[in-house]
Image (cartoon, rainbow, N blue to C red; front, top):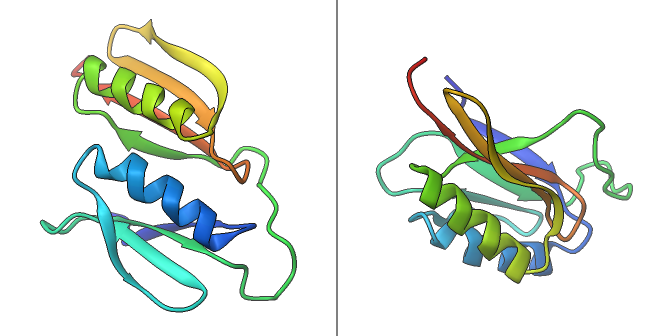
Length: 124
């Protein structure tokens, strides 16, 4: 349904290092990029995550209520992504838990303050 989602960067090179390492954990990698924007995804297609310097030249800021969610594939996968993000300099927001029978997830902010959810969904 989605082609890609975009988040802004304060320091594109540093944020790319974070996502290179984090998304590499689940087979993601930088697929293409220009000077101000980089696209991450997997070779098998699907939606992508783009990281960019804002087009208007103004400073990056994080939107309240905005978040990207990255599938972990399992509860163990969610735990591994959450742990890896913290190792890479993310800020803890909420440790992984299962608040609903069909939802397991944890939350961090990347080094530039963008909110990331790591999730595993199962049939209700």
